[in-house]
Length: 222
Image (tube, rainbow, N blue to C red; front, side, top):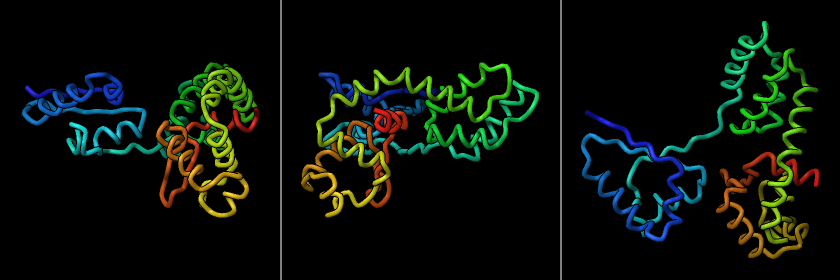
């Protein structure tokens, strides 16, 4: 018999006192098993990357790594169109679906959460309904998001606001240093902290984006 062992939120192990011993035990099992396939996943990208890419950790280069990108707009269009027919006797207009994907930045949690609200309606929702339900979710999330932002230093918060406004690249340039009124080292430290805590995501050419779209909206409003 062959079996698959799926371990979700694998990065939690790294917080335990005996983390090294547990990771070592996992590696031992993985290397000696012939009928067991292990699959690991985690929502804290930076911590997961450390577990499998730090040569001081037992799980270093243990397995093939797969980065899951956000679902494409085309896939969402097809999926939500099919679901709308099951709920209402017609297909949701493409511009409404586009607005859902635009306002949520295709973040899977917020797409699901917003659509859950929209699908409670008896009539086919329009763009105004999308705005209304999103505003309700925004209000419900405000306290939690503000609490999360309260843990940031002033330089980290200033940099986050700067990026949320669309300044995603050239963050170490003279123009950015002048506008932020921060030193290059302070910007580098803030970027490191925000990325490590999965608040920012670094893409190609050091292009940074806010990982959680709700944070961007909260910063804009408050």
